[in-house]
Image (cartoon, rainbow, N blue to C red):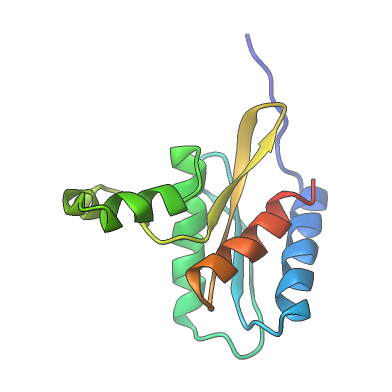
Length: 132
């Protein structure tokens, strides 16, 4: 039997705080979503000024990063590289900005961010994921 770490509300709070700080330091209005390793929502925070659709997109980015065990940037690169059939893959958001949370080599959750440019979303998500 294997064992692995799990995200508690303590870690989720640390992730949100780090991501929020990164966004606010850059004056970016974003939504931050945190999910567990199965893609189930643990937290969502929409900063002032972020469009309501950000809540949906951030959650889907986080879910895709958790279930795929990789950054969603890889999916976006596949599509941009001509693999358009990947757009029909179920439960996958092919937009950059979803980052897995990895502890001891295992994905225990993910952070998704939406609201600014793709690389900026990823920057905020990485700040959150690296907080633990």
